[in-house]
Length: 582
Image (cartoon, rainbow, N blue to C red):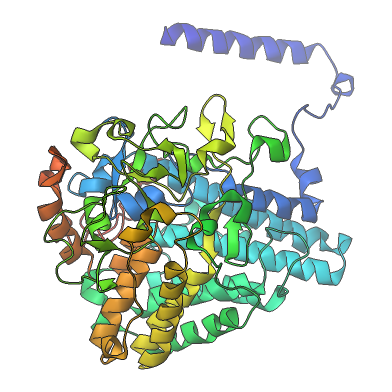
């Protein structure tokens, strides 16, 4: 068959050559291809090229979700993969770490490729602004450059977060066509962080505080991202030997305080009810500093529109038409919401498995955020009694238990946002929300010695949680108990740090950041290996599950970052260097 194909290609080539021999060059008609736009025309429209770069924010899929839920949650103690079993999708190695290689899961290559496609859009937009920016007035041109710098740094943050050292492909590389000559070790991790921060600083300098069009980056979003970059960098490089309390860079922590102060004094703020943050009608509230914009069919009247295809697997089994039951909360996470006298049970939370039953209160009380985060049998799914969950709403309870994720899905009564050929949701993806940034500020305050100010921030967040019962989860009111931290809990850095880290876990649970937090604090291997040891013995109402964790192990000085995908290593042999110990 191969020989036949080659013969056909040869015959076609000869035919083309012979045809060309019998006509003159002047007989050819130069026709623009239909259905595509020429590069020359595209590059001459800088404002549209910026829009094209924005379009990549939500141009993802469940095998390369830009919100990183498999990378940030499945890899942590917050979440199981879910689905029909460990072989459903290729994400299982993220759960156990011990089988993670450069080719498993192969989804990593898709993520790498599509993030660089996104960066390519940004580079083209920057060149278009450079060469044709005179089509815009100076103010608009500067703002658009700031937006593109912000977007490019946003995509690079994900790449560096995942792979430590990556090729820095900027507009100069694009203009010189040297993408395939750019290695991933041309710059150190610190140099890459500096380059990314430099883009965010240009964005910060050029962007206005507010934008007239929703969804565009502004100065406050750039400040928040700068704080996130400096906080990540302040603890070390991510590898445990170089990360943790003993490696903290106080100068970087001061940068966190500088930029979070600007966010704190902005028009953004805490949304009054915790549950509202995860409903589509509040998706661009004062809590949302920057988010990937998504829509449902009725909002944009298109077949696929800007649906959130990254979370399409994560609907509850038997409640959504395509509820594939992925991204399932762990028992350890549920236990972490336990309270005693309204405060976290730091030392004892995981000694016994517990779970609330609707209408059957016990002496064990819970942080109210549990009922906004985790769908549980006997409780209304996303606040709606007509969709109360049962044990039948779990696809494989013997593997992944009975819990479901709530934050990334709308209420079921709203109907299907998209259902052809797959179900997808119209939920926005938060990139930066106000409470996240205030927790960053509290973290930096603790590490620089301002413990009481940190306590005030954290108690404000807990007060909002305390106020978030009556509107959506009144059915669980007699199972909730949450109190503010007394001053004694912030008497030392060590105690305050524990409170902060706990608060961040509860507040941001199932929002795709848990593994990156553990890595930043230098406690990933200790936390995860202890988790694997206990979690494999999970039981709910006589059903055991999570026993696959018996094969799990996190290896420090290796697993802090993901391996460079094999296909990328193979594409240009010798160009890229693999991460340590893979």
